[in-house]
Image 1 (tube, rainbow, N blue to C red):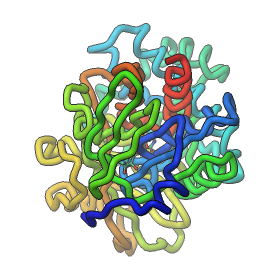
Image 2 (tube, rainbow, N blue to C red):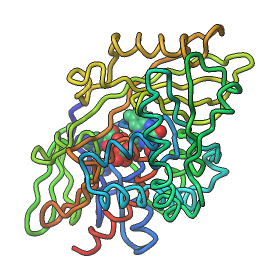
Image 3 (spheres, rainbow, N blue to C red):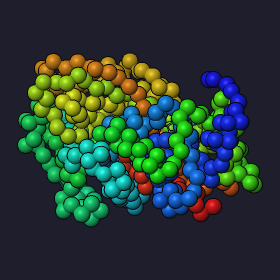
Amino acid sequence: MLKYNLSYWERETFFRHFDVAIIGSGIVGLAAALHLKRLRPRLHVAVLERGTLPAGASTRNAGFACYGSMTELMDDLTHMSEEEVFSIVEKRWHGLQRLRQLVGDEHMNFEPCGGFEVFTEDEEDIFRECCDRMGYFNRIVGAITKYPEPYVVADEQLRDFGFRGATHLILNRPEGQIHTGKMMARLLELAAEAGVRIFNGIHIERLEDSADGVTLQTAAGWTLRVPRVLVAVNGFARQLIPDLEVAPARNQVLITLPIPGLKVRGCFHYDRGYYYFRDIDGRILLGGGRHLDNSTETTSEFGANELIRSALAQLLKTIICPGQPVEVDTWWTGILGLGPTKKPIVERYSKNIVVAVRLSGMGVALGTLIGEEGAEKLLAI
Ligand SMILES: Cc1cc2nc3c(=O)[nH]c(=O)nc-3n(C[C@H](O)[C@H](O)[C@H](O)COP(=O)(O)OP(=O)(O)OC[C@H]3O[C@@H](n4cnc5c(N)ncnc54)[C@H](O)[C@@H]3O)c2cc1C
């Protein structure tokens, strides 16, 4: 890391005074910044981001606009109360509507294509269980989404998609997909238009809260003093605040080259949500498989995991696009933040610091609301 002191000009021109600094320019940090400017237009707000672009999950995810497939919610109900599970579903649903309002469907190519869950022959039992409990989920999730029957069996569409070995499909109708890159580009644009100052290449190494403000120690060697700080660094939270219950979780993702005559359309979860895939620009984006090597993937370092990558490549060729000429264009990884529950942490951490982190695998849905909640907590200080 480049070490330097700020010049007098830099200090006085660019960093003279901020009322609030937000660390992290993912969905949460940007949504928080926009909300602060909307509530208090005269506030001087800075977003400090270590990457050239946001470098965590928000520009590296799959772009599912989802709030919960049946097997995921059934699994959640085994270790969380009914109230907790459905209040998170409700938050994800409202978060998605808020994101659509903020960004605009046309700016992120929002497509209400539905979210599918794919079942294979050896998952007959769990599929049957889903069918038995569909009425229950439809009643509760229907009341949240105002869709009379969000979950339906959609086996008739199996042939359209051309999967091999898939025996059943459950469609979650209110879900959709977005273009993640466009969504983030628009949020950055909106923040700049609102007068938020976004600085890239600033890695905050340490925070020190005291009676009259927070000192931010940058990795470059200089410090910044700000009255109030919002920490929106999700999976990297422990690097700044070690006692937060947030574990980093790396995810491997591939995208294929365009596939002539691709039949797959929409967002899909497979194997209880361990894998996810969708179409984009005539290609398949596929990710997941973290359960195959959980300990290695509990890391905040970007990087390949060959075991998982070969499982994903195999899944692509055998089940998703059998008999088709599929070639991987590129791979990447993203880091998300997990905890013992799926509830995000939005709280005042110390006198002048608020944290808004731990968005699990649903930050597209939750990010806007969590950022806005964090912003309001900051204003309440
Ligand atoms: C591969 C993958 C697929 C996913 N798919 C989906 C999906 O389809 N649908 C969905 O709803 N969710 C999905 N998610 C989850 C979702 O992307 C995240 O929950 C969400 O983006 C989190 O946003 P955030 O702003 O909290 O964090 P991030 O986007 O991670 O932003 C945190 C930012 O903080 C910066 N930062 C960290 N430490 C510092 C520091 N010390 N100093 C300065 N800056 C710092 C990072 O560079 C980063 O830009 C996926 C995640 C991954 C990784």
